[in-house]
Image (cartoon, rainbow, N blue to C red; front, top):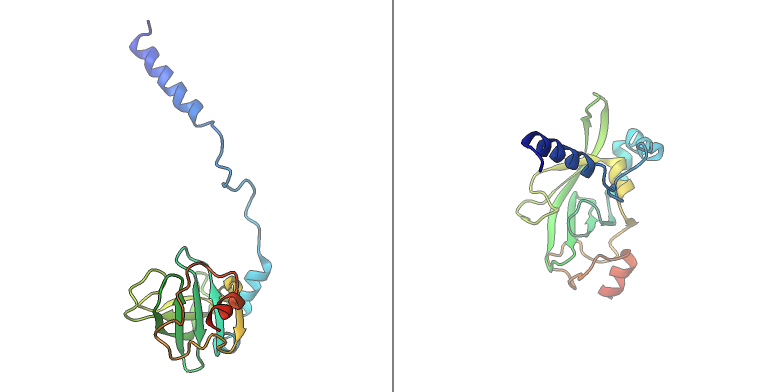
Amino acid sequence: MLGPSSLLLLSFAIVALAACGPRDPAAPTTPAVPMPELQAAIDNSTPQEAHRGMSDHTWLWNGGGSPAQVHYSAPDGRDYAWLVGERRIFVGDWRVAQDMNARGRTITNVCLRYPGAGVPGLSEGWTCRPAGKLFYDMAEREGGDPLRINGRTEAPVMLQKTPANLAEVQALVR
């Protein structure tokens, strides 16, 4: 029979061995990889390029852990967001701003807001992202309003699943 101090020592040994168990297969095993193209896009984005990249463009967004979103960003600063699983098209605003980053450098941001939206993935106040990163993270972007959502508050169909691309969405609305 083991004494109290032996039981304590055995408990510590079990805990220590458990920490040596198998690693999470999704855990990174290498150092972070530099992404010079992304960093260059962020560093070199100008307000004019960001405005030109947003104005009169339709884009697909799959990031952020919220439902996928299809946007049309109109030249007048309005943004129309169509979310997977929603019948409503949310009307918001977009703008380009220059702000200081954590290093004290001026960067160009694209800012979006959707007053009254009240759904995950759309902020009621201004949410700004570095323009280069936003463009880099877009799943797809094309000029114009091929889905004809400018000025609409109701989607022509409800998107049931995340579309693979904008062409898939276009096929649904024809």
